[in-house]
Length: 363
Image (cartoon, rainbow, N blue to C red; front, top):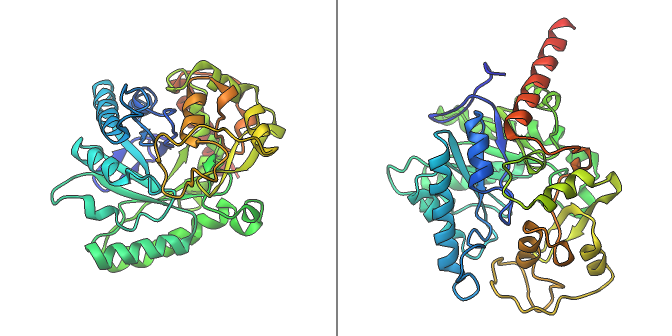
């Protein structure tokens, strides 16, 4: 695997593994720096990064700007590797989070949960930050490439295609999640084909990253053989020592059974994949959390109609308070059996990848 570098412009990643950005607060400076130190790309989440700031409820904007700056600076002190920030288009403070990330010199911004059609406008001339949209189809990848080229005379530095087995908010309709037409194995070639025209016309390489449900080194090998330049994993990195979540959060993944992985209707307006717990069961039965919306963090969330505040629910879960929250997780979360150091996980994935390479050579 050491010979399989992931190149995104002038960024050279020794291991073609990107750790998915997970919020609220699940992947911050500790996890991201640990992944970067092992040759992958470590990613911080820009979803309510001010969750530890004292003025979060009184001034969310200032708290999140300060929180993200501090987390990026902390991560930089812990690693010389490649760091990214995941920023959801649906955030009401999207522009703030993008600008702060660029000002702090982040290596790459990953942006999804909506179409990041305006992302390049925040990038000043000379900035080295790379831009990577997250899409769920070849059509979306083509639209972004067209819009970016027409409006800003630039193309994505990479494209992440996230399939329906991912955790968290999903870019699919609920009925598409189990439809064979939308499996990642079909989406990856479609996105590769979509960007190929723009690569040829402009002499630029746009690496495509496969994401959603990837669990083993054998999975990594399969998608690289399909033409992906790298992969993104989120769920596997939750059950690591360096993950920024509370021990109770990590243990929820270790203890989860296959039947516990469910698809919910999020207040954000998208389906989401999570681990079943009493909080979600109560919501399913019609219970409402009467708390007012303290943040208005998501554009598509209607506080008057939402059964709960998703920001508060995810922040509670981060702290292990599952009576008042829940955890997003990928479809394969039930396969997680233990909490290990990031180095052990990365080494295991690399070894499985090499085994798959040797097996292919023998056949």
